[in-house]
Image (cartoon, rainbow, N blue to C red):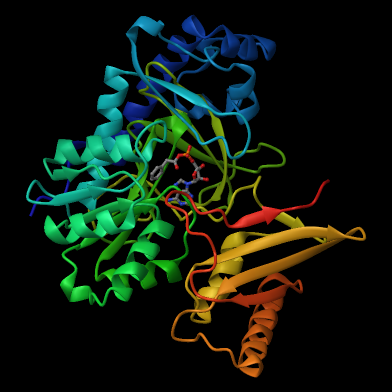
Amino acid sequence: MERYYQPEIETASREQIKAWQDERLVKQVKHIWDNVPYYRKKMEAIGLTPDDIKGTEDLHKLPFVTKADLREAYPYGLLAKPLSECVRIQSTSGTTGKRVVAFYTQHDIDLWEDCCARAIMAAGGTKEDVCQVSYGYGLFTGGPGLNGGSHKVGCLTIPTSSGNTERQIMFIQDLSATILCCTPSYAAYLGESMKEMGLTPDQIPLKAGIFGAEAWSEEMRQDIQNTLGIKAYDIYGLTELSGPGVSFECSEQTGMHINEDHFIAEIIDPETGEVLPEGSKGELVFTSITKEAFPLLRYRTRDICMLSSKPCSCGRTHIKMCKPMGRSDDMLIIRGVNVFPSQIETVLLNNGYAANYQIIVDRVKSTDTLEVQVEMTPEMFTDNLGEIDHRQKVLVNDLRSMLGLSAKVTLVAPKSIVRSEGKAVRVIDKRKI
Ligand code: DLL
């Protein structure tokens, strides 16, 4: 079976990867210096010129780019190619501020689609497969990226985009889709809906799923794998760096290989900006070394993560990142305690709930309050108040040991929390701080 999309790159020696990175970084810094006055000024402000960057060893000298820079330079300030050479834009949903608009040349799109093709083949995809892309199409990068990757692998591609669950299921069944690409929360919802229709995993033709764009836990992976009868692979990326396919999981399912021929990853201390050694937990920073139109040097993702270069049984040599463990900016601080929504999700899934929940944070008489609303599964649904009360108490206790914080837990009826077809909205922060 074919295992790699670009074996000569994906299994290259570490020396070769470093040589590519050194050469491409030097070229990229020069390209940006020559074409992006906004970044050139940032370099000049600290007395840096392209001659100071001789390879990856010098990466730490370069100034960071942050989301604030993207906003300030919006829309064209970070563009490094004439608009006449750009063929597309994509954009973020703008949930955490002003939209980010990223530009692509045809070459940028080609490389991006290669990255997505690598992810599909790492999930076992070949030209014999039928790949249903249920990420949103349009400005969001999920649909277009995986659509392009699926074409490159040669899969029969079903561009359903998100939404219309009945139609999604109809296509999966009628056209025997074998690979599903969507957000993990939508995959869980599709699984739930198929189960309700009486479909058992062996009646569902899918064999693999490529799920990303939002945080999901190991427990949620198990749930999705069991209901759909598939292997569920994680995929990571962000609009600023092209979209999905910055990194992707392989058969080991123990972290995502970063496409290091295109991106250099660093982990930094989010407070001080200091580069941390491999294995440390910190903020993920990426430098795109092959992008032409919208190249970013040392872009601070705000994703908290760890890197590992432990050899992988799949044969790929590119470094792996763990599942992002939350964001340094969506981390909630409740009564002084740092809380990641993923910690709450782990407690819920460990107690047999599905990932249908909402976290509501408020401030009452200057004290923060935390409420977790979680749906009972159809199996546990009851109107026995004693039973409900008991279940709520168990969750309150488990949340206290996980978070060191007391939370109110409210169990609600199955299907009463609004489903999202894209990224799930898990946190409602009503505090006015
Ligand atoms: O979410 C790109 C994407 C599309 C990735 C489809 C994977 C699949 P943005 O909308 O710009 O781009 O959001 C980027 O989403 O900084 C992370 O915080 C989060 N994110 C993306 N993938 C994962 C993942 C797309 N696998 C932001 N696990 C990133 C956890 C993820 N968080």
